Image (tube, rainbow, N blue to C red; front, side):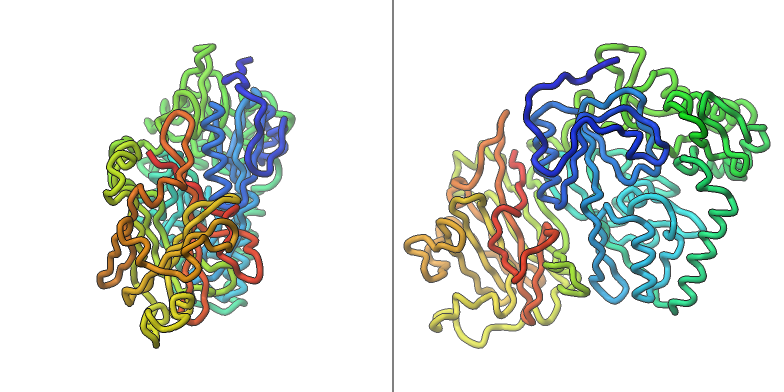
Length: 549
């Protein structure tokens, strides 16, 4: 049995984790070897730190939702399994809009919609899985499809960037998305629905869907639901095809095809992953031989499997470097996988962070929807360090801006005390730096006013910065204001002292985007979970660390 890759150090993941975990206890199928680590990041910042740590260690990385669509290998997984179960925030951001972290269960989303009297998500009730996986595979059932209600998807790339993709960038059609073909981790979803309904009507539809699942015996034995995606060229569902081919009750070892739905394979009696794949391979071969259709596995395989079984099921894989008879499937990162992000390091400007802000503490409609922040790296780090007076990082906040965010100040910038109160009128804020050392705070508003402060430690203003000012930064900051967008660019000379060198080249820049609306609303990007009260943006330990090339 391969130990790919070998342990490289005794370091441990930079967030909550468990070691030597039996994977069969984490997946609906009840199948799988042991994982070296399962890590449980609770925020985008922790996810980014984990991905960077894992790559430094040279370990394979896989992502686990609820395990409702996952078949783990019988072999041990000598790497890190990233679980999103600690990220389950659901918050209402607009009358018909929810922000949902990827780890939230589909049923929890449906129940929140019921509570709010919002119609259009009833089909999610008792659909196994978490919303991140539901979006990643464009799940559908009972006439509903997640693409129809998705307004944006927050994705963390393996090169440390966080950005929100628009629906047209994600969904390609029936159970097919760009997320299934590119390395990246879904961290959050913006869902937007079409209208309201009475709670009685919504609950009746939810219970109707549950009754149908029970009638089809979906929960009789451990399974992952449909094994194959429907091929609509066949003119009928896979379950009907396999029933006609006589597969109901077919068996391989402890794996058996359901007697009620022929596209379900149950783990009836201590089935192995190999049992499931052998049975699925027989079904796929029979569909091609008798119907002339090529079926795609809906089930996601993770780990090291016999290559013949993967090929027979049509699963793409990377050949094991120690044993060519085996292949690795479902690996997000690790030896043999594409380079991080798939973006050439000389591709500039490079987006580091992009997306709308969410409410500080996740309360209902806490921050106006639609205020978007964008952070870009304009040139390579190595060149910026030489030409340290050229624009290096651009930060901007854009529209549609709610009216409350654009209230002009009542006093001019030279009035006593005003510069300490710019945030009271509505301002976008950028913090640079972190840890226990110095950091910077920049504030800007749509009216064209801005300021900057340097801190030597937590809330301790540096000498010469007791009063916020823009004058001290004229040589390193260029202010940019236009209709619907405002912000500034920074030189390496300003940011260089806060960039931490990275092993193997590049650097890491801790930062945090925040905003104060004119009516006291507070926003964040990336968002925090368990945000401290009273509200406080000065929390360097929670800042997001972007990787600079």
